[in-house]
Length: 275
Image 1 (cartoon, helix red, strand yellow):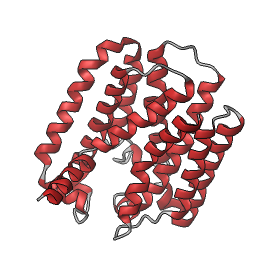
Image 2 (image 1 turned 45 degrees about the horizontal axis):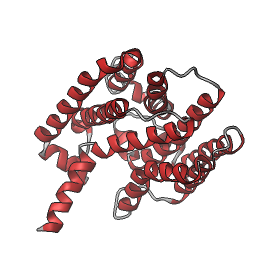
Image 3 (image 1 turned 45 degrees about the vertical axis):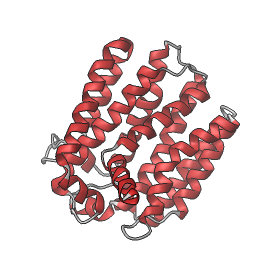
């Protein structure tokens, strides 16, 4: 019974995007550590709410196009009411907290508009932004930069300097790695839905190599431009992750999920230990 309860808890955390919200917090805390900012509980709570709201809504909206053969899609199809409740609560968190950090309202609105418009078919030919060739990786990575670096920087009132932009570039490159590799997992469904991710466009082996290069460039910036040993080591981890972790659906996907979900926590720990 205890084992079954743990499995149920695991599914709730993973499939409602609560884990994505926790990843958002860890990525933001990493940026805060590197830039020497003061942690802001309101900003962290907002980021958690945004992640859960956007990704949870995306899973509900995208359910019709999913194969419904994998565990996540089956769970979402069966628990739509629960997921919608989580999405509504997270949306409420955003609405309640946004007035407390008025300086971030413009960026917050831009993040939400871009993230929510990502799947809407508003482009000529009835296409969405995610269906533009190679657009997914830079688009989503840029939103993550705005979320995890832009919001805390604006809230802090700090004047942006060279170090801030270097850190944002590193976040962009590391997120590009994670998104590119994670897309290998969805390559079959993306092809069926007309989503031309980098994995679809250039194939698995090429996208692994490209993603590894993204991380190595980020690691080089971390080492030589901002002297952050922690971010450098994180880049090495991401590079190894890109070329070694298998991603197709199947029995090896557990390792893929763990390496992907744990990546933000590993990056934070490395920066915490080595700066």
